[in-house]
Length: 121
Length: 110
Image (cartoon, rainbow over all chains, first blue to last red; front, side):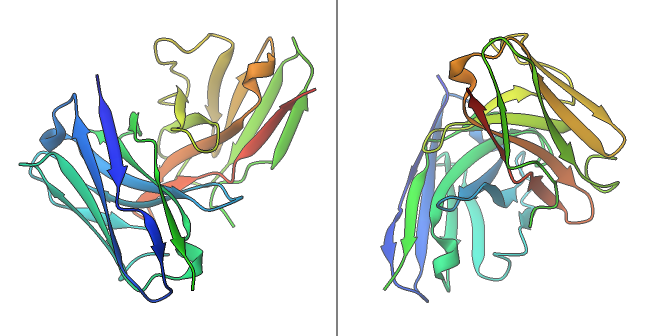
């Protein structure tokens, strides 16, 4: 059974940092491109970032997070990460990790249940 | 404002057929596959259609996707109360080098 389990969410002050993790199981994580998608309260889904699989370390970012967020992966631990810096209230959202298959342009076929990030003083 | 345009709401009565539209441009819908997701807030989104008009196993054939030029649609026939949810189109955008979602359409079953 495929599982994606996000962790690391919580309350952080504006300007602060947080690192999200997504532990994967039930599929060949190292060969899978992965993404982070978020949903702010009362808003729609927004793609945040993606990273290639199959030893392709290419990374992609939405303009809204470019320069502040960094996506990475540790294939030895089957874990995806999202380092979030310079956080603002606009980053408050539920963050989902999702699998994209062989390529980052592949559709989101696996999803986690999400972790809530709240940016507030 | 989303790169992909969806009406914020749609409604229908049980048994009816409703269509949700998604409008984009040549850099996204015009040149790539469209995907549709059903989402109940707080849960993982569910893939309804992929590669414009394909349906994953387990998705009822009441759900069908289509694409023409720079627009796409999701049709739901035989509307049921459990179809009341948010629906999103998603496409890779070549100009942005990233994924774009429509703003979402909240479907209400009257």
